[in-house]
Image (cartoon, one colour):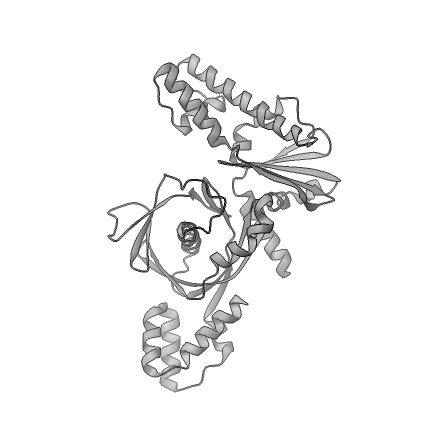
Length: 358
């Protein structure tokens, strides 16, 4: 539907007056401008098939994480600032007369990411970064967006999220000195966790029951798969991500040792890697990580989730961080860890291609 709408807009603009067409030429990429100028000189009528030639279609799957934005190839923090003036340095883009710069200060947790435009701007960043990878600044691109939502919120938010990301107008973004023009064509949302499981579907199809656990920054999501299909009646999203662990560790170490730990420092200690911190701090951090692991596994047990039968798939950066504690807990039977932080984004891409028969 969005594709036809975008095509209709382009055809309508092209058959406007010469003055209107001139305005259009200013907006388009060089390749499109040259093609339209040639058509104008020849005074030919535009056929829809000619417009198709000037467009290149591209699927860009995006995982809008509370902690990080992820495509199939890229990861960056879910945080940005806006300014009327061009930043002197940093990773920024120019869009509709303003400058948007990425920052390490992530946006506070939002269950509904459509409440303001910040996640749309982060979506634009994701798109232009992917277009930059393939040097696609010289043409007009039809972008299809496979995206996702936590299983618990999927039914209530997927239409709203798809509408939020769908924009009628052509998007013109300047990034790292190059202009990118694209139309957001088709937006399709899929359940998280199920998408991640699709990346290892060959390993899971032998199990009747699979529990997918996604331990992220702010939330812990779980979903039951029965015979390879998601059971949205057995899913939930708990406010129990690893940010809660970080905050607890930071508060205790600050109180007992007057030391301010960064998350990267905590990660090193949790993973058992060498650090410059004294053994007492390392011991506390690792003990708290073990307790946190026991607690979140116990909370799943309280929800009648049997983690010792079937197969349990762990997804997300938090699960990778706590893998050794999960394995040594004795509370989980057969388990598979998906270490890729982009697993959900890759799963969205797989599901989108399957849906479209591509």
